[in-house]
Image 1: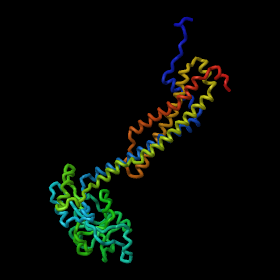
Image 2: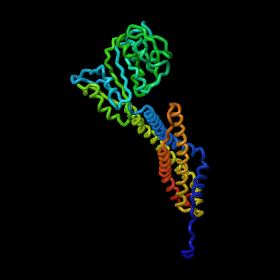
Image 3: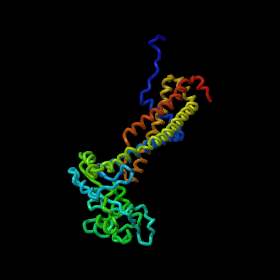
Image 4: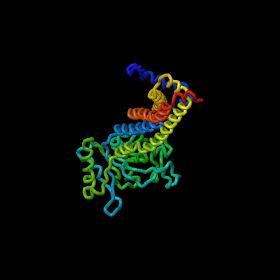
Length: 399
């Protein structure tokens, strides 16, 4: 036989490779499912961790967009001797004179406690603070009244109080019209506020008008917090001008902050534990990869006669390697697809239960596919090489 007449081995197309690989998996369905389960758990864990973190961050960013980032808060700082500073009584009026300021309001701490009745000890405060509030506070904070009404010019001078959402809950009040004991006299609850994400201190407060606080509770009239809103474009300009405007003599004793920065930082830190949880998912994925490799090694040992028969019928070493590598890839892909679906469902379920938007980043799904292919390749290389090295005669005589 001349050199040109030598037989050349047939080539396996992609469809043939997939068919041969799938045939090997179908012969042992239980083992395949159990092996793919390890991959599925690892992929599902990683996608769920990334998805839940992304959903939480998206919720915070949407909340920021809704609440706005143009709210600034002015509070007293410290004097040069380390004592607590005070804002001037006319600080609110001075802030309102700043041209870019659209709206401003103030609150002031009052030395009083709020209780359900006069028989409860003054030491039982429930963490609720009493504050004087200007009538423009709700507009400035863009808050909402859950029940009742907000303070107006009339009720601000009367023994009327509006409770923050947390304060009402701690007092066990769910309706208006009832009375609470404050500063040695009864105050009527005229309103209960909704949540205030940018001013959580308001949620824990009982709010009365400035005139009522001065006349009935001994308030000195000095605000402890001033809230102002301006356009987004002028926020930094106003921020720079506030200390000199509020306290021209001692601008260093004035602290200006932007409440939305806390939410932005929270959004940035939403994935603080993501790396740790991803590490746990990677460990599960590694265990799954070891399970796939173990399954393929056992498969090679159990199918030596099949390998010997294929080799004797003309299959090359390369074709045997491709067959077992294809089985490993298909096995890993099966676990990867199942894990991606489980991870997406877990993310969606958790996000819906918390009222968040469900977000599964496309790069996470793409990463899952890449990770699956890498694991399938690494796990299948040794079994595939071992199968290809088997001698046909030795393999056919194996028991």
